[in-house]
Length: 76
Image 1: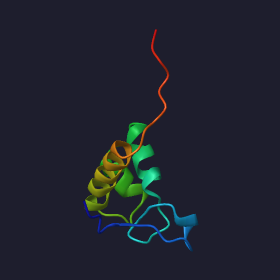
Image 2: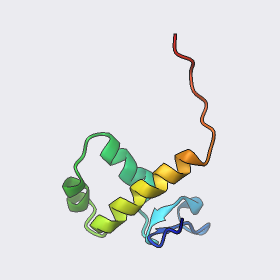
Image 3: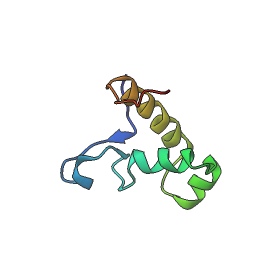
């Protein structure tokens, strides 16, 4: 899967995946949504991003989680 709106530049933000070369990490956007912020609120708080950036950030996060093994705590 290709991500045209997600960039990772070692010289910017330590290579953390960001939205379109902006200094807005994908993790920030995903974190805000996970905390209950609406997409409209995210767009208001980050006027440089577009609705398509949020959609691609969600797709990127889904692929990233699918591609790695995450340690889980066994439930009782």
